[in-house]
Length: 102
Image (cartoon, rainbow, N blue to C red; front, side, top):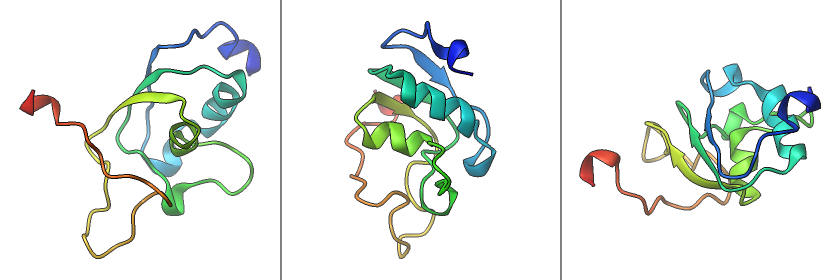
């Protein structure tokens, strides 16, 4: 699988299919190991919380936490209920405006 991502340059836009546990965790894991930075990601969610793998595989939230993601484009970036804890431990509120507000 490492061969599949070996030539991915920094600064790409990465479309990530699935939602939470349906995301391509094996692909994200080898991309994490490959080292690409400055990524723009387009996905259904940022994942994290219960969807974060505990078996060593990486998720989008791991790439974000490692500072490898420059911009996230996703309709779901926060918990669905204000009384629930943040989806990703230590996550920060977004300072980006929705595209429709630009």
